[in-house]
Length: 329
Image (cartoon, rainbow, N blue to C red; front, side, top):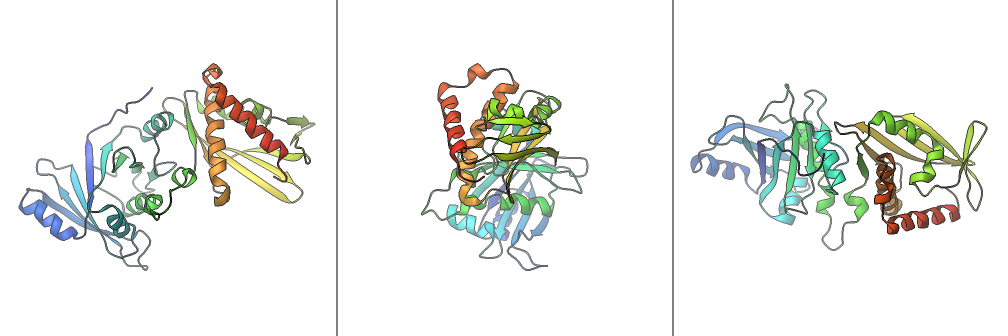
């Protein structure tokens, strides 16, 4: 499977405006849209019991299912007020239905298309799944949405609306500086056309690390594994947990952990590096290294290492040398 995505019908589109009621009235009285409901949400800047997001949901003139959501921020600190101030009023996102959001996400990752979160937001009660594609290619966000029997067209849960909104934070940084790659894409991933059942055992074997990472000097002593470094060996444990594999390096009382989540898709699986434990000031470098390593992992698993460029192999060797000479973990 490859791009382009197989999109379903338009699900909805959202406007961010200064006065949601006035904009909704124009749509109703001039354009023939029909009111569905008013939905208020707290995305995190209002006190408990309060709201920072006002949504007028209107049905399109020729549809009972398709809607426009007209959004207004209710506090100065809300992400919606800040977005309006930085980008002005207008279309915030256009949402399309997809049959399988995990497969769609895997194709986007394989094509180098960024999203504002590492995985879709799932509403625990309805099963509704949503994720934003980054706004750089188009000037607005594109939303992919997988609906469920409990979340029919035109229905949005407060939890997902708040969660999606908060994935936009990196787009609201000061314009005086460039947003780093690590802030835009904190959890690198790779779509692999091999089943999770095949990929997981490969990742669980520490002796496979030299085939796709900069960690090349791995050895086994009895039942334990170590990584040889210039300034002393490190202990290495590989643990199957949390839907994937965790690599834990240790020396004395210090620990370093990197988790790879392995999610099955229709085409194979999606491997995502979860970097919650990596300090923010070190994240940009880690993202850069893991993006390359995951790319090579995909090539190894799909038996196409000849597709990896010489430049990428040289970069991996440079990572190995830096790791080998590193003091500490």
